[in-house]
Length: 151
Image 1 (cartoon, rainbow, N blue to C red):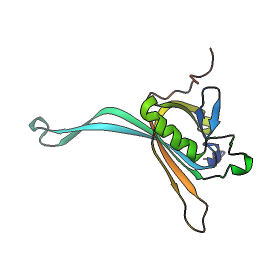
Image 2: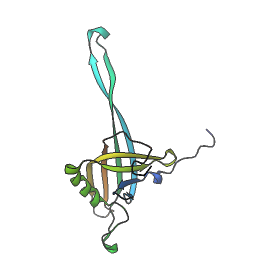
Image 3: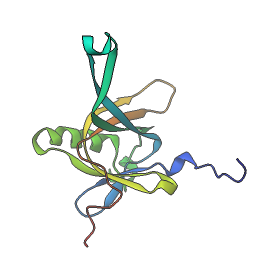
Image 4: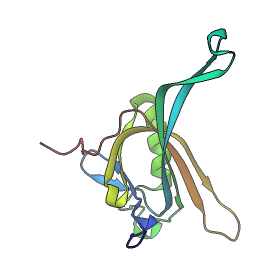
């Protein structure tokens, strides 16, 4: 098609609601939003032994990857959420439950959701920049309306 405009990947930012404002997860290199249809399979004699699948539910998750940053030069404070803060959030979620996030999808707008940080990891390899990744398991029905703004 002529005239299409490609969306730049760097608009795919993720931010965490800290109770006052959305705080971006810093130095992301990628983000992904996955929607999976969970199905039930059954086989019986009524359908000649063929496997029949039917929809059961939807599971959604967000995956992120980024570079670890050193905030010691600025007093250990970052304008965004660091990998250390993601790990602290995950530990706190054991007792406190899911947190609010906002995922930017460029011209498609924002996706607002509650999620558990089901995996957070970092990787330090000699001669390379340290990186991190995380998986957020969405625990509610995502929305395009910010639940944290006053009506």
